[in-house]
Image (cartoon, rainbow, N blue to C red):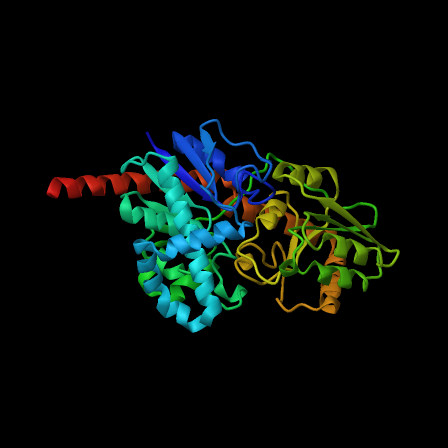
Length: 424
């Protein structure tokens, strides 16, 4: 019996990790049982928002609440008196020292969560070598907890790395606790972009054998978006409303265009009310609609029902945006900042790649120039966008391949263990 332990951030709760909805059906076909541990959700604290496969079950971390200061204090004290945890902390000290007391606090907190993850898995499940593999969706404390467990029970551990769990420069201090110490202990780390692969390899060539690229993907059942035919230029954005997405740049740019434009945004977040207030101050030629959080299916349905001329992403940083994959699958050209792995999606054939430090004035000029393109050129970009999606970001191909890779890792780990037993 093949078992998969899947460590998530919050999935299948709240709005986090919507893209796992697409991946998990493929995992459920490859494994007999899937055990999901959402490491940032306490039992009873959130509403389940997504269905899971019939062979999947949900487990919660034991005695753990991120908002409970008493419990946080107890788990940190428990960590500091744990021999295995202290060995991990001592190996991390050369990295921690570069970032002062804040780096040390981050490392201890990270380690304390990892210990809870490790202990919870051991308590919740009967683990046996040869039939179980752990897959951490993020390179976070869950991945650390998994490799700590691997030291006690010989089971393979893999992880993905995306963006926020990969690029240390996004943080202050520029430090992701235990990043390279964990990678060295993984059976495989799957990067979702070539950019992510290069980023890690340039910093530590000794991990080359652990790194692989496994791209994310989206599904599309022959849904195709149409361009506007009423002289209104329609722009779509789809993201969480947080500072890193820099949606205010698009608002400022729209103030500068002199044609009829409609912008609709998909997604919610902490900046929602602020952005709505600013949108009310746009000139009469600009209309804005905020559609809120939509499921992957609802996003595609919206693209099918309502015209779209251009998808825009002005993020300050990215891994490789799933939202752009969705747009491409519907033949929607994209204008996006050249950050993270975005250039592996967007180029001049499928839209326009723009500078990271874009100004509202330049963004307005780029949008105006794009709107002025002949319809034949815009149609070519639409066709190219779909082709890029179909050959590189088609979920049916990518997730089937990824599931097979996990099966092979489990099988190889089992064979290796049997050989060691035989040699004894």
